[in-house]
Every structure is written in structure tokens, then in C-alpha cells.
Length: 473
Image 1 (cartoon, helix red, strand yellow):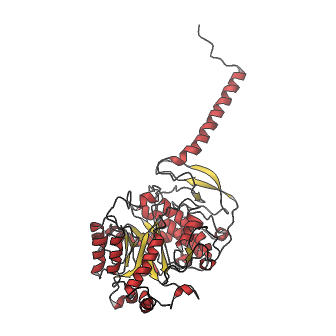
Image 2: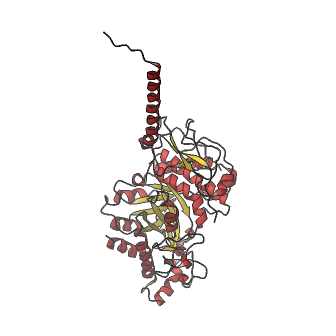
Image 3: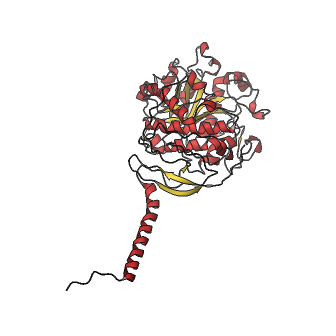
């Protein structure tokens, strides 16, 4: 005889209760497991975002055209963006300052530092990368697999050169003989294909300096940052693709702003540009700040763009000045070399001009879990001195101005030899920081007077630099 399938009322209520309990368990597990789906960023730390995931179809890139207080306040949502077509979103509560109008953007740029940002108007727009597959990247993907160990021919030194024009044969001679870890060129970039051919492990940074690139200040007042980023990338995209030897492309050179609103704008611009470049199969170098800038509070305003670069396979670049007196201006204890508003970082030697980059990493990037974002000092030069500092020496506008003084001080027998000693000191400092890929000395290839950089040209230093690289194994 078959057993009866009828349930009593109490049995039915018990069964329904078990079903709801099981559903609750599954929902809890989904919040834990979804952030580990392929293509999603790591669950810890979560990506801070005031923006919903992209839901609109891909927009066609536009055609080319002409110290603050930090507070935490209202609840927001951390969003883990899925790979294209996944249709899954995991959220968890996080804390940020205040709610902002939603906007669709893969850069998912949060304002997690400055209260001022909450007052900025944001126009909802569709991102140029909406609908495209944006595989979240990390520094290990930004660089060749196993770099630099997989390229044993590379020097252990982190020094190289910035080149304004390929007119000095000593540059390629250095590449062939010493295999620098990196090199940078501006505008004249076609010859970099030969660099990649003879030294495949050399990381190449490029930048274009057309008028639109360097006269963008009005954009901060007239354009939405995401729209501006789309226009900027679209204006250069064809040339980027014609030069595949370049690994990372810089954008806006030496951005400098006084209003904090402009820093927030620039952070959103660079975040969008980094992820848009990734969507096009390219990689961005974000930042590009002049020596001695920004101030500590302004670093906080830009830090979210560096999180976006970390996600989208980019790197961080900035410019630094090296002091003319070896060992001067860098200290872990001297308050005179500390920038205003910055806390102490016990055991970490910092400087107002030299290794200023450590403020970024100790103060912002390492605490955010992105302290392995690769950094390049894409212009390194003597100068940018601190007012009334004993580390300035006699003062001067370029390294050639110091040659006689260095010789008189017994630093070396010649000016180029003395400058090489100063650069070797900076190299030693960089090699203490694994996240630093290297520095490109400003500048080579400026022999011609019409380039206006002849006083900075390192033609006489290049043979000494080549020897330094060869000896650094």
C-alpha cells in the first residue's frame, strides 16, 4: 500500500520555513562568492563606487574638438562590475562621504576623501566604454609576465632617459649595450619600434604634445570629465595604434590646479581615460604631475584615479627634482623635508622634492590596497628647489649650471661625472621601492638649439649612464 502524500498543516508550515531558511543561506553565499567571478575585482578591499554599473549600449567616441579636511559620512554601495553579459552584481555596505548623482562609468570613480567633492555638479552620461568587456586588471597584467626577471638582459639600474627627438645616436647605443628597464619619448616615437626589437623587455612610455593636449585648462570649466576623456582618447587613437611598441601612453602633461574642484575633475578624467584605453587594447599612464606637486591634501583628491588605473592595467607617472647635494633633502626624521599636512611615516625617508612620490604610496596607495601600482618618474631633472634650503647648493636652472661648482666641491673631476654621481644616488633610492619601475632623465635628444632644451640635454652624460647601467647587474 502506498504511503499517504498528504501533509498536515503543521508539517506544511515547517516545510515552508525550511525553504525560506535555505533561500537565505543561498543569498548569503552569493554575496560572498560573486565578487570572485572571473573578471571581477578582488573582494578586499572593495571597489568604492557611487555609480551604478553600465547598462547602456556602447557610445561612439566623440569626434575630436578644437589641504582639505577628510570626513566620512553617509552609507553608499560597493559595486562589483561583472564581465560583459554576466548580468550579476554583488553589493555590500561601505562608507563614503555623501551621495552624488549617479553616472554610468566603468571607472566607477568614488570621492572617498574630500568633503568638497560632494558639492560638485555631475551630469549623468553614458561612458564611452559602456557595453565593452573591461576585464579588471592588476599590475601583474600591466607589465609583461614575470617582468623584469624574464628579461635577464635588463640592467638592474632604474635609470634611463627621456627623449624629445631621436637625434642623438648615443641613445640607441645605450639601448643596444645596456638594455635599460624603461625609456620615454615625446612626439617623435616611430623609432621606438627599434628599441622594442633590440630590447624587448624595455618598458616604453610615450606622449604627444599637440596643442590640444597641452592647452586643456578650459576643459575643467567647460566639459564633463568623462566626455573630455573620450574626446582626448579619440583624438589620439589612430596615432596610438600606429605605434604598438609603446607600452603606456601619458596624457595631460603637468596638470596643476588651485581650486580643489579641478583636482576632482582631473581625477575623473584620468580614471575614465585609463579604462577607456584598456577597452581599446591600450594602456594608460596617469598623473604626470610637475615636481614638488601636488600638496598632500590634493593627493587625496586624485587618489581614486590611481585606484582606477590599478583596475584597468595602467601605471602612475610623475616628475621629480633631484637635489644637487648627494644625501641632502631626504630624511625619515627631519621635519624640514616634510610637505605640509603630511603625517610621519616611521622609518620611511621622504623629501620635499626628491622621493616625494613616497607620500603617495605611504599615505594613500598602500592603505587602499593598491601599493603595488607601478610608478615611473617620467621626467627626472636637477632643480625644483625648496626656498632657502641648504640643499639647493648655488642654485641654477639646469644641471649644466652646476658643473663648475661640483668640481670645486670635489664631487668629481668633471661636471658630467658629478651629475652622474647625483643620479646614481637617486637610483639607489628608487631601488629601495619595488613599485618604482624607474626614472627617465630629462632629457636626451635636445642637441638642436631650436628645441629650447639644450641646457638640459644629457649628451655628455650618456656614455657615463651606459657604463652605470652595464655595471648594475
